[in-house]
Image 1 (cartoon, rainbow, N blue to C red):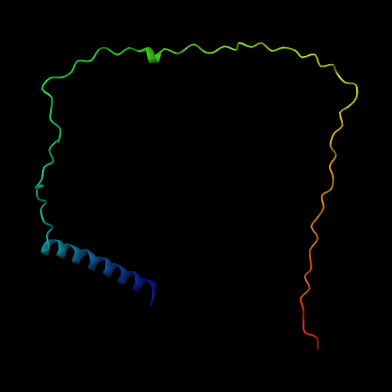
Image 2 (cartoon, helix red, strand yellow):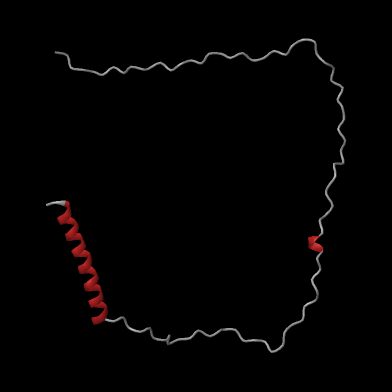
Length: 108
């Protein structure tokens, strides 16, 4: 089939979908929504008078004083050394050698 014939078939299928969807909407209308049968009511009992509250102090907004460093650094009396300190030298690591396992075989 040529590509034009395929496009005509696709257009006919889409038109068929539109026609049947309109027909279905007319024959089977959607039901109208009904109002709810249960209305939620609050479970608390309201108080007749409101309780007065004092004004809010903003003490929590004032920053606290920053801590200061109380100890002063002192210089230690370590004399300088004339010799260099020895350093560790890198030692080569041992590499793992593969182990061979002897598999017993039958003797001929």
